[in-house]
Amino acid sequence: MEFITVFLFTMWQYSDGLSCADGEWACLDGRRCIGEEYVCSGNIDCGFGSDEDPVMCTQWNCSARHWKCHDNLQCIDEKLVCDGDPWNLPRCNDGSDEDPAMCPQWNCTAGYWKCKDDPQCISVNNVCDGLTWRSCRDKSDEDPVMCAQWSCPSGYWKCDSGVQCISESGICNGWPSCRDNSDENMTVCAQYNCTDGYSKCKDGLQCVPNERKCDGNPNGPDCLDESDDDSDMCLQWDCPAGYWKCQNKSRCIQESQVCDGFNACRDYGDGSDEDPAMCSKWTCPAGLWKCHSGLQCLPEIYMCDKSIYSWRSCSDGSDEDPAMCSIWKCPANYWKCNDWSMECIETEFVCDGHYRCYDNSDEHNQMCGCPKETEFPCHDGHGCVDEQSVCDGIETCRDGSDELQSVCQSWSCSLGLWKCGDLTCKPLCDGKADCNDTSDEKTNFCISYNCPPGNTKCADQLQCIKTESICDDSIDCKDGSDELCNDFCLKSPLMDGERTIIRRCDEDSSVCLPVDQYCDGIAQCPDGSDEIQSDCSCEDWGLKSCNNERNPVRTNCLNIKWITTAVNQSALACLDVVNHIMETQIDLRENDTGLYSLSVLFANANCPPPPKNKTNDRFLNHMHGC
Image 1 (cartoon, helix red, strand yellow):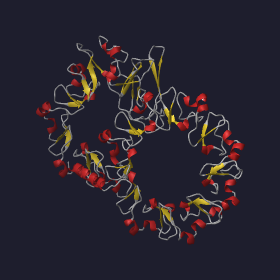
Image 2 (spheres, rainbow, N blue to C red):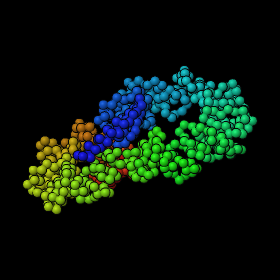
Image 3 (cartoon, rainbow, N blue to C red):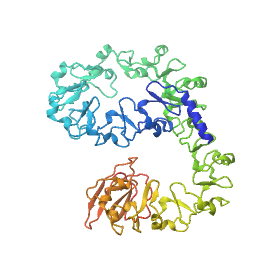
Image 4 (cartoon, one colour):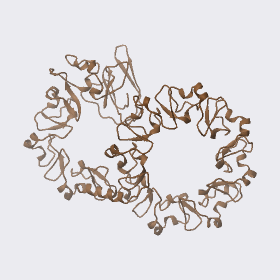
C-alpha cells in the first residue's frame, strides 16, 4: 500500500541523517540515539518501540556486561542475574534470570558475592553491612564467623565489633552507622582524616560535604556545632568547584544561580550575584544562554518555549525573539516544533502518540509514520486509524480521509471484510446483510468461503462465528449448531488458534468437555477419564501451575486466561500473567461442607467477561496471580 511505502521511506530518510556516537544505536524513526545498553532491554526507548522489535532482538548481541534472557528477546545487566531481588529492574520478562536450575551453577560477576546456601548473588558492598535490605535470603552474608574474617571492600571501613562494614562517608558524620557506635567514637574522629570532598567542622570531630559549608543552611546546619556557616570561617573558605562566592565573602552559591535574574546573595547581605557590572562580563556556564541584555543567563531548555513564567524567561524577552528563534538550534536531546512557536521539546516526546507542539507537528504521520504497518495515516497528518476502520462508512480521521472515494476505490478490505457496491467494507458471511446490496451474504459464495482465523463455520456452512462463542449457552448460528457441542467436537477437537478448548473424553466416547473441566477434581466424563492423575500435567493442557498443596488436582492447574476453583460450583477470576497489575493472595480453606472457600485481595484490572457455559456462585472480575 502507498502509506506503507511513505512510512518506510520516511524512516529511512530520518535514520540516514542521524549520526550516533560509538556505543549508541540509532532509533529507526531517526529521531534519537540511545545507548546500546538500552536496546532490547524490555523497555521501549525509541518511538514506536523499534529498539524492542522482536525480530531484531533475537539477532541482537547484548552490549558488554549484559546477559541475554532465555527468550532471546531481552538483555539485562549481568549484575541482576541470580540476585534474588525483585525490586531491581529491569528483570527478564520470562523470569530466566532467576532460573532455579541455572542459578546454582552461575558464577557471580565481579564485585558480587554468592550466598552460602542459596543460589543468590549480592553486592560485596552489602556483605557484613549489618542490614537486612538487599541481603542473602539465607542470611549467610551476616554470619558472625564469616564476617570476622571478611575484608571490607574499597571505600568501606570495619567497625570495632569486627563484623560490620560501613561506607567511609558515614565515618564521623555525626550519625552512628556502626551498631557499636565506633564510627562516632571521639578518639577515632579526632584523628580521622575526612575523605575527598569532605572537611572537618570546628570541633575537629565531624566531617561534612564541602558544598554544604557556607551555603546559608537552607536545610538547617550540617555541623552539630553549627560551625559550617561560621562567618569568620566563611571569609577564609574557598568555595568548591561549580560554586561562586558572594561579594561579602560570607556565602557560596551555585554558578547556575549567578546572573539568573534572582538575587541569591541578597539573603546573605548583598546582591552581588546580580550586579549589572559583573553580569555584563560574566560567562554563562555550559547549558545556559545569555539574554540580549547581557545581564541574565537562561537555561537553554527554556529558549523559545513561549513560557509566560518569569523564572524561565529573559526579563527583556529576547529568549522569544522570532528572528532568533527561527534559527535557534535546540540543545541536545531536544526537537524544534514546526509551528509558529518554534518551541523545543524533549526528543523522547516526539512521535510518542501525544501532541505537545501547538500544530501537532511532533506527531505528524509523514514524519512518524504509523505505529503499525496495518494502520492508515490520515491525510492531514494528524493520527492513524486501524485498517478495520478504513472505508467502513464512518469517518474516523478528523479530515474524513479514511472514507474518501478516491481512497476506498483502491482500498483492499481487511481479512474477513467484503467490499460492497458502495465501496464500504463490511463483515463477510456473518449471517447478517451489512451491505446495502446484500452482496456480503451471497449463499453460493459463503458455502465455499473459508472463515478467517479465530472463526468457525456453522453447520449450514453459510455463517462464520467467533470460535469462542461455541458452547457458551448463547445461540449465535442461525441454525443453532454452535450449541450442539458434541456435533462439533466429535468431528475434531475444537480449537481457538493453537489452543484446544473442547475435546472428546476418549477416542470411543460420545461426550466432549471444555478443556478447563479436565483435571479440575470433578469427574464429568462417563468413564472418569478427565480426572486420571497421570494425565493431569499442567503443561500438557497449556495451563499454569499454582502448586497449591491443599487441593493438588483442582488448583494446581490454572488456565492462563481463567482460574477455576472450588467454591460450591465454579468461581472464575481473570489472571493477567503478563502485566503484573497487582498483587493477589489466594487462601483455600476447607469448610464444614468439605468444599473450599476463596479469599482474594484484588484491585482493578481489565478482565474479559466470564465464559457463559459456567454457572458461578461468585465471579471475581479483577484478579492477578495465583
